[in-house]
Image 1: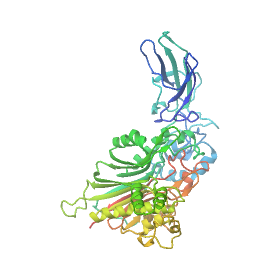
Image 2: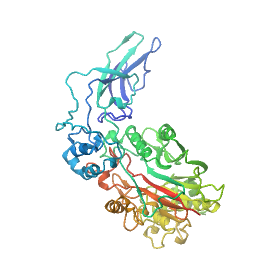
Image 3: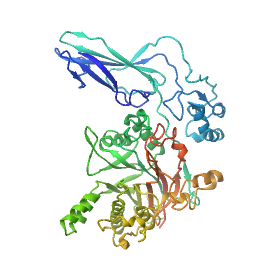
Image 4: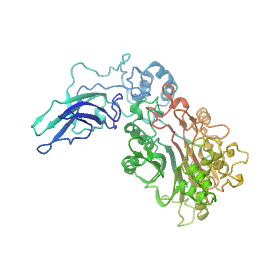
Length: 572
């Protein structure tokens, strides 16, 4: 038995090893009969007459502290901003890989120099500048062969902070207890371990005119399409480095971004079922959240297995308790609609067009902080949160509108049974001004709206039925009117207000992917019971673009932006 070849599965071998991202070599074994297998052979010592592999991980003692680019963390730094050092800006923000990279980031550097805490990272003490030779890093390097310290004894290894700047070596030895011998070991070295890049710095901005000292309870809500791994393919995102597209990297970056904002309620879309069970649910639980999950109603074949994603809603257990959960399966509504059709061919056509497996998850939560102190004794402060992912196909405009209308009619029933503030969030796969957005924002769709012309089943007629009575408003419309508070500075306030559309008052984009840039995600609230007091700032397109390409990339691990708002309960 011998090892013919192996490579790293996740992240791919051509990328750098990253703190927190598991390394797991793929091993090809040739047995004595010349057959080749990739199946696991038990690791470690085994009973008489068996074969096994003995795996070891080593860390180099040659501790060159590798400086990496703050924008492109897979690249070694060749330039360091002396202004950042003088201003005591966090050191890792001072590094760049090329002069072009540095020039592009210079506006941010000027902001950091004026306000070092604006990076969201601890300021550094006085530090001498490092010499960075062109094309390589010369931080604490020394000559001489590496010595190796064992750090792991199984096939998989997850680099830690202690490994930063060190090379890792994987060694695997085939063992055959029949002959009581060990074959010659095979080894492979990695590049130097780099830290997990810090999540993008996005601050909460105060809304103009929002109360600053009210005693009413406040809470924050985030909505985020995290890009399920089954859709994150190299064929779709050709511009994304393989290591930055791998789930091992993205899951850690996404978690840090989500937990860094510490929202009270987190609504995620495209959460793969296995990743919910193995990662999101346990990790969010450790951070103090309770989880609720709803899978789509059909799986997707990814070439080797069937995989399914869905919507997950998390809430902080010290802020809310779960009162009730509703699961909306649009397929069930489609089946009910088809039953009302008389002709068999009509039923078949309706099901073929409407059965798209999308879902919504609705939770009713009870605030543990209670309502306004002036409210009647014993009154509960409830809030209803809807989290959905509407169908994506741009050709099926009628299906999108029908799904949104179906969801809103369900929410109206909940509102009729209880006077309860509501939030409607998610990825609606609909741009501002589209029929679904008009229904959400205006409560109706104008009969002359061009998208109503796409209605082969007649499910949108008459247009007068496309309405609802919920007083919904988009949270980010507050960024345009009344606007961002001038307390952050007039020029800063105006800069952020220019990042919403002047007509629809929605973000200029929430998705910047392979073949589309625009707004698909929304955070609506009932204006008669809630008021937005803060909004998570929106980036410029230049902020999320690396090397001329969109998201995901090494800094932004989804092709969508997270949206987040702080709300205050209105006093009754």
